[in-house]
Figure 1 (spheres, rainbow, N blue to C red):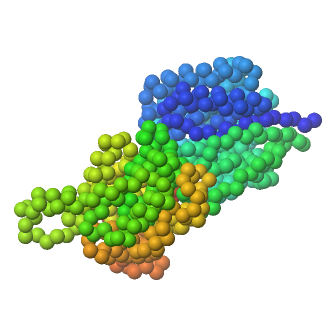
Figure 2 (cartoon, rainbow, N blue to C red):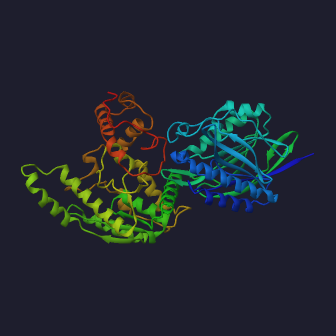
Length: 551
């Protein structure tokens, strides 16, 4: 006799703290999954992930209990049971849990055992670990529910198997990182399947939450390691998976398998989704940014248009006496290609006013970096004035290479509310710009065809704060700088280890020094999309005051 069950996987977005809206969305999706026996939602779907210290408010926990009861009551209609991620308080501590809702009641609860406390995660600050979980009994089937981090630990799934689990369902809140797809499927799920001999349904959330972007990409892997389903990246999706038990083993019948993005398309989509959700959920009418004619601002503008639409993006050129005609022409052409509002506000009157204001105090001192930074700060003040007057969020345009070594002006080009390039090295910026000129992203609201002149990509980068300035006057070529920075930041290598890779000792030592002394600037930088394993802010948390150097 063949047994059958239909399990709906709801790859959804979440709104952190908006419990009523999250619950309403879950009920709406349940109605769409009417033929299912069970519908499963991502980790902490009811309150949103990550909740950070918001979850410590007793009022939020009380509201979560009320909304969970409302969801449970809805299951009295005989439709699909619900497996819901939420929080519960017991004995003075909080637990990250999943609750089975069936027949009008909360029938079973399982707690998350392994609490991640590294990189972007600090769940041990918020939650208590649960015991090794027992399977959930659902209509004669024993379902193991390892919650997110639990799936990374073999003893958790081994325990579930020993307790009689027949299927593993893992609700996740797994943020996007470059190359993480392969780690999820082959490095984690595949390993657990080989160890237990059990099929896994891996369900991830989708959408942006501050610096984090969740890419979805949920999947079902059978015991033979074949993928029965793979849901799309970057968008919500609902799939009704069909399961059959044959010869004592459950198998998911084959369905659609979406093709994942190649690099750098995945990075670009992460930027688009992260910016879109940040701007929309914080209720900004749009964004304003300085369009300099350089590659960083051109790419930032393209991402903004793809995220929000051209009508919500306002680009401003703020020329000084050092701004070249090429930059003026390239900025105009970028704006034309993107179809955005474009204004020119010369900063020379303000530069002259500051020069006059400071003339007596600066008398006898040569012009130096101070006067260069004043130009950047005048631009920052100008853009913030537009933001204050009209409500648009100021989008900053600096990249990770610049932020790493402090090649950015605090209260100047670092001013703003969000940065899509914050975790993108300069060489990645070049790759993304070439890709976007040749492709229109699937999520994009912007135009097909090029979004910036080719010259923006090929000309030497410059801040144009003095005559004939080039980035390479102050920094090594980006083809040299970025691998050094990757080694120092992502890999935590020492100077000696990088020298062993073939880099010049003096150059590496200088870059390490610049990296450390710029920490105080990065503390005051806006949030930005996390792309790699060690972004500034959530992953890499260094002291500002530190005398350590590896050489």
